Length: 358
Image (cartoon, rainbow, N blue to C red; front, side, top):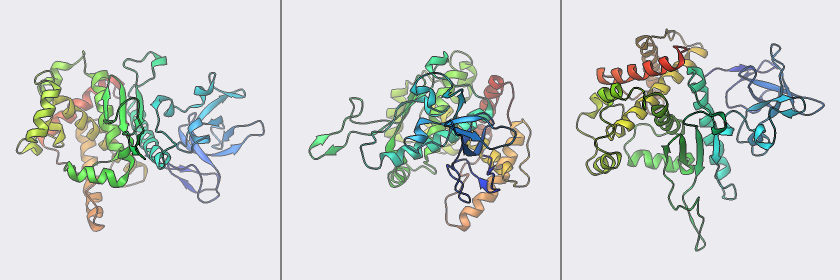
C-alpha cells in the first residue's frame, strides 16, 4: 500500500478523506490512481491537484451522503460518466447489492469499516491485475457484495433481513455476503477465540471469500484436475458432509504441516480459499513494506523471491509486535506442502494476468 502527497506537503494515506495538516478534503482519484487533495470547482465537483493529472471529479455517493467511502468518480461534462444515480458510485461501491440498515445504531460505523476493508481488497486485486466485474459488464461470474445483519429482537419485535433470521458470511456464484457483526471488534475477537483462529479480521474475511470467487474464475472448468492433486477432491466428500465432519471432529492432527489454518482442513474449497487469502496477505504486506521504504524487500516475479521478501518483513514485524504484546503479523509457517499450494495459486494468477505482478 502506497502513501501519497497533499499539495501542502503532508503525507496522505489510503484511508484518508481529509488532510490532517491543511484540512483539505482528499479522495481516491480514478484517473491517476492516487489519494489526492481536492480543489472545489466553481461549476461543481472537484479537481485532482496532482500536476500531472488535474482530472475533474465527483464524490462517490457513499462518500458525499454517508462518509463511508473516500473515492471519486470521473466527471464528464457536468455529470459523472454514464447516466443516473448509480453512475456516481465509485469503482468499489458499485459492487454492493445490499448495505446495512442505517436506522440501526452502529450500522453506519460498521458499514464504514466494511467498505475500508473492501477498498484494500480491490487495491490488491488491481495490483495483481485480477479480473472482476458487475453483471452489467458481462463478466462471468459477476462479483457482488451484501453486508447484512442477523434479525435482532427489539421490544418484542424482530428486524428481518431479506427474509432470514441468521446471516452467514460466505460466497455463492460470485456473490459475497458478510455479516456486519464482523465489523464489531468485540464480537469478532470473541469469535476469533471461540474458533481458535490466530487471525480474524475484516480484510481477512474479504480475502478468504474472494478466494472462493477466484476458484470459480481461475479453476472451475479450467484446471480442476491440477487443483485436485494439491487441495484434494472437491466433489468427494460433499461440502455439507465435510462441514459436518469438521465441526464434529475438528482438524486432523499435525494439520499445520499441510494447511495454512485449521479451517483449511475442512474441504478442498476452503483450503484453496484460505491459501488464496494468505497469498493476498503476502502481496499486500510486501507491497506496503516496499512502498514505505523498508530495506531488503525487493523481489521479482518468482514465488521464491516473493516469499523471501515476505519472510524478511514478517520476521521483523513479528518481533516488533511481540515487543508490544501484540499477536504475530505472520503466524503461518510455510512448509513444503503449503509452498506447493502457494506456487499453484501464483501460477494460475500469473497465467490469468500474463505475469503482471508488481
